[in-house]
Length: 143
Ligand SMILES: *[C@@H]1O[C@H](CO)[C@@H](O)[C@H](O)[C@H]1NC(C)=O
Ligand SMILES: *[C@@H]1O[C@H](CO)[C@@H](O)[C@H](O)[C@H]1NC(C)=O
Ligand SMILES: *[C@@H]1O[C@H](CO)[C@@H](O)[C@H](O)[C@H]1NC(C)=O
Image (tube, rainbow, N blue to C red):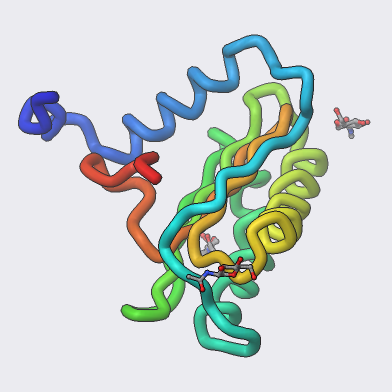
């Protein structure tokens, strides 16, 4: 890999492009699958959990109202910083996109209980949060 060659392209664009490509692939039989990261757990009522909650209340709206149906946000500070991103399929309408992202936050927390790092994929959208910058060129997507 030649990471230096990627410097001209903002890493979030590279990630968004990769995600968009993923949506162009034939859908799997299952309409949902998840990826629970290995970055440890948070505890009930922790600042980390509060930060996920804050993101889950604003990111669905931000993604669905974005022209690209994509939203990225960071809440909190280290060690409770949470990075989150949401992306809807290009043909999703705003309400379906918002609902999908909103459910994504719920499902991710159920499928990866107390996981600091989780991602859920659906036919219609993709939702991920992490304590690591999931849009950084060096760490993006590596779990
Ligand atoms: C995190 O929580 C999950 C589910 O409760 C548990 O299976 C796992 O062992 C925990 N991991 C750590 C690092 O504590
Ligand atoms: C959502 O969008 C608003 C308005 O642009 C912005 O102030 C806010 O920080 C965003 N929040 C998230 C979680 O994306
Ligand atoms: C939005 O898309 C969903 C799912 O594809 C569909 O059920 C719904 O009727 C659509 N709503 C509008 C307002 O187009």
